[in-house]
Length: 156
Image (cartoon, rainbow, N blue to C red):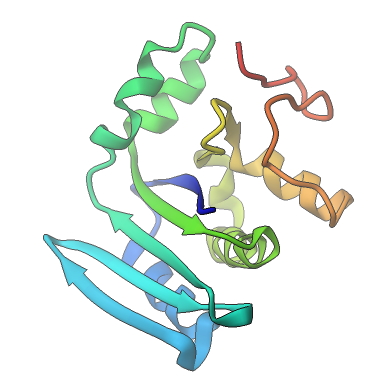
């Protein structure tokens, strides 16, 4: 069964270089397509599974429902409002984590200005995701509550 996550990247990040970086990191098992100005990558992973990445220049449609959530703080709303989206559809959590870490490594200090939507109703600052992965390599964003993160983001 496919799962999804979305990373909202600051508009100050060079999305063209990030796209190329992810393509290079994925090696020869990458298929590329351009569709309606959104860039897409299909990456063949372990066991011939495919992982699909789509880069959205305009993330408004991707976040429309998030603005209805009362619990989102003003800082997160501002980050989401000034961003582009990278959607990742995957089957294997560990392979998705590798791609996510490649995104985090490329962004460097700009992770402070990025948000991850775990597709389970929780938005996380990408900086918090980075810290959790560094402290606990087995950590996952595939849950509904995060007591290990300041403010305990969770599904309401």
